[in-house]
Image 1 (cartoon, rainbow over the protein chains, first blue to last red):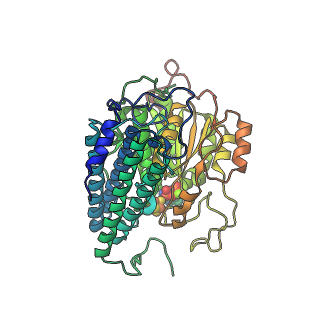
Image 2: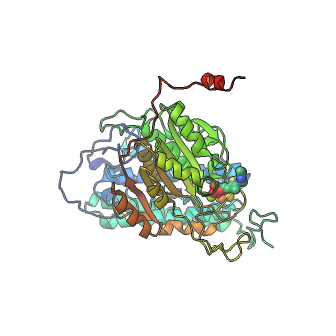
Image 3: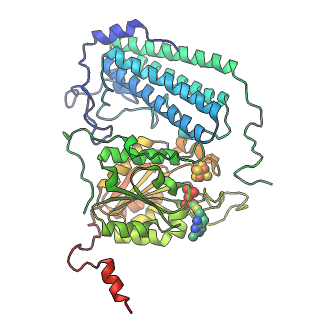
Length: 221
Length: 284
Ligand SMILES: Cc1ncc(C[n+]2csc(CCOP(=O)(O)OP(=O)(O)O)c2C)c(N)n1
Ligand code: SF4
Ligand SMILES: [Mg+2]
């Protein structure tokens, strides 16, 4: 998939935010600390809603982007292990590939920001629309007989959600630098959507009865 | 009492990561099962609390959900069906220094183990009881459990059982549990936070985790569209909590009740019998 473009790198640099120090606490509401100075007590948030704090500064946006990619990579790696354990090697390999791609994206964000370790989550934790990041596959999406086509459908759904997420941040952003960086992320996700659609077009479609198991776990007459 | 205190704001970084609590055994649940996620919440909770794996014992009964101890690097006891709380209570009373977490399912915990559940709440030993509720006996291929909806029609319960389903949270509260929460497997980080808080809270902490069984209850994939964070914070008023729980629709997620009843822990040391003392009593 596409590599990062230099424009956001510039945006990140001009933001003049100090790089967060290495994570001092495990992620968790009770112990998580802010990577940067918190806003003044009582200061009204400029934006509201899921991910709203990501729209406040380029550093916060990049921290959200990092968390989104890292969590997606972790979930795909877990999926690969699950499918391996069930001897569905083709799908396992595909999830591994997706995990590698998302991991690479997260590493690129660290590199762009000059961060030597993952950024600290905001004090409130990441505020996504759902319980997890928009690129993280749902745990119940798997089926033991699923085929590569299904895995790519999952990936497509996630890329589309990520695209929507960045589009909404671009709309919410009040600073031009943040809007620009969010728009670049959105464009990249649009590109990922296109690439996965192409990948899907090259992948055999499953037969209608793909889930048919001659020895099913649930008994039917 | 060994309830784990909350870390100070400036506490040093946890020396452990979630990976430290995973064993080398790969889980063999069905792909898509909620229990994978609950396992990840266990390990994340232990990392949040920075507990050494050898200071934790994970005790379970029998069922898909009860396989969890084998997948952790902590001490584990995969016990007898429905008896996890009996074994865990004995362990905690004999070794109060250990953090004892009990894993169960709705069949294991509410059917065959239902009586132990009531008395464990009442006794209030310092245990954390995590029940992965999928409203079905997963391991034995789809029989209805006490939390199954009365009209759930299946090959093994044609037309549904017609029986009113059990409300574990209300029962836990009425029986005396000191901490009552509901979590959702689709939110592994949120579930980890709740489990960590349950462990930190002294006494018997009960965490009901809605954990979809995609094989026998595939419709539970929809739960993710229904769950929501509880609109009200935890209360320490049991009557208020009971009213809330009696009227909620089963999809409010969060800590719902947190009391301050002192945990049951008989004195150790003087007067304590050893196995040898007990054996002497049976000598012929
Ligand atoms: C004494 C005894 N009775 C019955 C069984 C059969 N059995 C094994 S697991 C199980 C039910 C498990 O259901 P649940 O606790 O909901 O776990 P799940 O598999 O759904 O996670 C039963 C009845 C047994 N192993 N031992
Ligand atoms: S039968 Fe149900 S509970 Fe058991 S592993 Fe499969 S999905 Fe999970
Ligand atoms: Mg069950």
